[in-house]
Length: 398
Image (cartoon, one colour):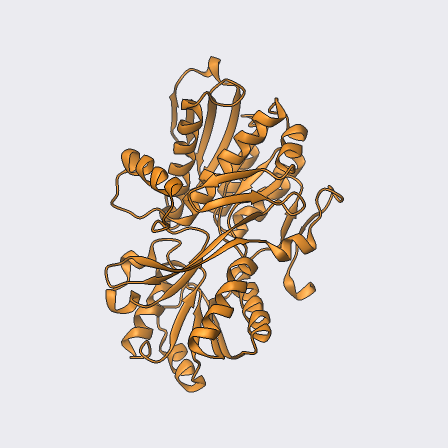
């Protein structure tokens, strides 16, 4: 069964009397972040359909209560409270931005229900009730910087948004650059509203880096890639990113700007394995093939399946046994390869794929790093030994 709530609409389907366990889903189905939220929601629905077709959890179908956050942070707080107080969900799947995650975490902690956050992010979130299925910045940048230094050279420039994702990711760039014997020769942190990147391009030209770590967020910042290419810099300066392609930016940038750009994430649709082939088949049968599947969709697909496996292992949908089952070291054969939940940090060990953009708005995989651990989170978080720990660690305090 599914219930989808917005400000004014309630849609009901199915038979509530049969539902064993109710879960909540809060995603940005409208507004500026809906390019991510629609796919996250689609992935959750597809996962629930897939699990229910195989008998559901504990032999009964899953019921979904869904909410449209409308790309507004206040809606996350509102609907998280509604989900736990009125709809009494047993687990919550929600959020894209770090601000949405941080708005939700205190609510689910107080309600004591498992919360699954499915998105790449800057890292460091530690909370007994929170489980992160996207890769952290340290997982992505630990492999990307070493790879890029070997390919392009040792001089690095950082272009990033001026908030947690950008500034914390920049810390990891500097740390892994030092480990690789490289140096950061310049950096620019820019507001999401900036549209003229001529000053940044000029700074890059003056700094003469071997490659740029570009972390553009939103449509405005994608414009940096076009302006960088238009300035004729791509032929002599590499560009790498941990989030390019996570919102299908490769579809909207010109072939001239996109060809040769390098990205790394936990999933791209071009990943070649039998599980992904079956997942893509299921997805395209339900949603079509017009839009490539993004990494956040697979993060949510994995989250729902890990939660369902935990419920079935626990034998009940109650929080304490389910969290204990999740902390038992569950693994899942996912579209992006085998993922394994780390008991202490509640993050996933997973493959990281480095891809290169082509001139057809797509990617090709150039290298795969197997079973990359969330090393920073494993170091900072031991939620088994310290279940009351609830903190968002920043690497400056490492």
